[in-house]
Image (tube, rainbow, N blue to C red; front, side, top):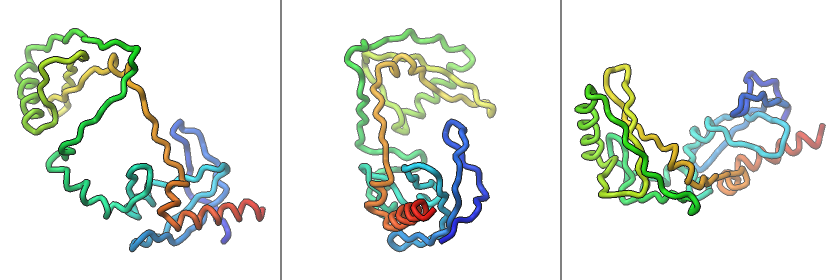
Length: 198
């Protein structure tokens, strides 16, 4: 299968150009879904699954493995309109034990936005987005952003707490994708053959 000249320009997250060796169109299937996809062959040994194909095949990542979004009905059932809430889910943030909690001073709110802030806090609480706590070792100031529409957006200055957060990076490689996506295995074999026949 010959490579064709690509009509796209690929860049990294840092805007660095990714050289493209060529492009090939392949029919890809996953479960009952079939799509025609363009694969771009680039130098390197870490193939990536593009978001366009990921979306077209209705794929999802759960526990480091690929799953069809059709299998995620149970997860979707836990979400409600209008915002979508994960009922009964508690997120635990890993913090460094050597960083002591910081209770920052609260910033004075301008008198002109106090009523709007109070109403917005009540709304967020009534919708289950935020909840009251009696006390906390961590206290961060509220930041009020004026929207162009005239409303307000409430933010929190989390610069101090973020210094204590242990960032967990999740790296999903194509090897895990290949466990569930046979079409990509074909593509990997195809690109490998292309490189060896040059």
